[in-house]
Each structure stands twice: as structure tokens, then as C-alpha cells.
Image (cartoon, rainbow, N blue to C red):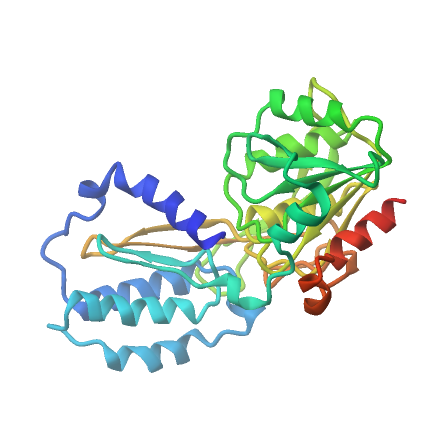
Length: 335
């Protein structure tokens, strides 16, 4: 991952201001005060209690007895991190100078891809690497295949123009984001803007407006603008997903489902569609949690994972033989 990408992103952000963030305020380092502060902040701000049917008061009753003033920082961190992981949300984290709590979204389901199989049996070692994209022709040049493992925030027009010009004469594209744990959402807009000619309604979102678990504002529509310049590709595009497709990866898939000539295929994504935000605890540690809900164009909430248009799973026996059933199904769909 995916998870590694999340940790690296947070590490880069926090390393530049570590002293300011982790400075202890007013000596309030007692364990109980910090535990209660974290629980209350999440109680007011987290966006998915009702959706996930989480009894937050019961979780407090479960973990609060484990906290006592004078316990070690490491022990306190472990208790608080375990409490947050009850939310089963990769966007919920506790960050200290010595550890970061992360819910392992990778464990939600099996991997639905083997990159070595793709390399050895489909695109070959003469594949092209353009920035974060690995790509080549399939089916004797009739189909373009693009592997995209993360959203690094570095996708640019030069890369997209080169790739889309290379595959301009194909019947269709396969855009593979299986095991893509997310990153910078701007990449998704930059890429998808090349696949439309007009502004397109792709999802909607709503945020908390009160402390109650179900106090939200009205959903606001989000529109994808077409790229103002550069090469466009308006033929059929198949997006491949699995349970390791998370955060910006899920957003990409959700937006793709709002575009007429795009289809999502593979397994349900890992979710991660809430916008994370957070704050600082009295002892200087920081936290974040999902504070918004993203909905598809029909108002469906897929925080636990967005289902594909066509469910296809890899067969482990056939995968060991070098056959990727998801990729095979995508090629058949284009042919």
C-alpha cells in the first residue's frame, strides 16, 4: 500500500512542525483527561456512527476502565489507538512522536491483483513507465493498459498527453487502480478531466452541522470539469478495483461511475470516502477522523466500500498459472 503511503504522507506533514504540534500544553498530560478529550472530539465530529451502527458510548465503557493516571505514554497510546480502530476507518488516526495508529484497510479483503503476473504475462518487461503510470498495449495494440498504484500528486499534462496520444487509436483503455491506497485527490481530477468534454456531476457530499451523530447539512453536488487543454480520450474505459482501492482510489472509482463511457470492474473498494480532519490533544498528540460523507450521484453512501458495476474476482489457482481473471474480463468487455 497503501497504508505505507498514508504513513509517509502524514510523516512528511508532521515532520516539518513536530515541535509545535507535540509541545505539551499546560502540563495536562494525565491519561484520563486525554482519553476523554479524544473520545468527546470524535463523538461530536465523526461522520459515520449511524451509518456503521457503532455504539460509541459502549466503546467508551469498554476502553475507559483501561485508562488511569500514571500509566505509561506507550500504554495510553495503545488503548486510545485500539479505541479508534473500532471505527474501522483508515482515515481515523492517532499520531504521537513515537507511533501512529492505523486501521489496516488492506485486511478488509484479499488482494485482487498480482503485479508480477501482469508484468510477466500481459505487458512484459518492455512496458513504459511515465511518471506514476506503468502502461503498454494489450491484444496486439487494440487495448491500452495503464497501471496506477497511488495518487502521488505529481500527475501532469506532459504525462497525460504522452499516454493518451500513445493509445489514441485503441478500442478502449483499462485503468487499473487495484491496491491503490489513495493520496492526492487532485490527480483524480486531472486524469478524469481528460475523459470528458463537458462538466459532469460525479458525486455529492455533506458535512456535520452539529454535535449529534446524524446532524448533517444538505448534500452539495460536486462537478468534474473537463480539461481545458490537452488530448482527450472518449472511448470505452474500464476501471479495475479491489478491496485495497481506498480513499482517493474510491473517489476515482465513484467519479468514474458518473461518466457514461466508463465502467468499474473487479471487487468492491475499501471505502475511505470521508474527508479527514482533526486536532490536538492536551498532551500534544494529534488525531484525525472522517468528518464528511461522500455520496454517489444517486445519493448512495459507500463508505464501507463502493461496489463495481461488474463483480469479477481473481481465481487463485488460475492466478498461479499466470491468468488475471479481472484483466481478462476487462479485455473481453472492450472487445
